[in-house]
Length: 127
Image 1 (cartoon, rainbow, N blue to C red):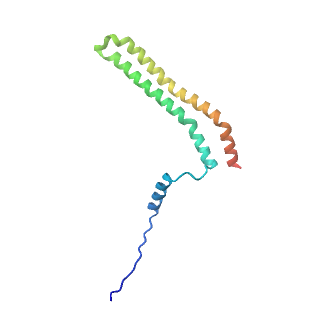
Image 2: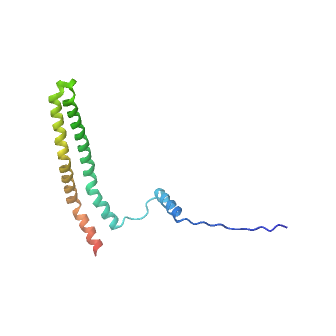
Image 3: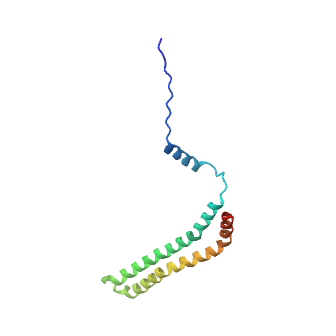
């Protein structure tokens, strides 16, 4: 009669377990409540997020306008577009110059709006 050997092989990989946990957390319904520190971080990030998007849009459109204006003034076949090209280029320059002040203004307004909640949370965390 043959002797059967029953063996159990176990391999543990912390890396695999972490990956499994991350994938599982994506699909699990949110159960934990947001902590005060997480809420404070989220509010701090939200102060600049909208301003960044708006200033990027203004900056990109302005740079494109500046490029179109430059093209209109530099191409010899487009002589009739020289003056409009200067105007379009100036609009682009004005937009590029105003993108950063727009960002600062929007961040300042948002921070003023969020200040009471951030102060409350930070006081709660520091005690």
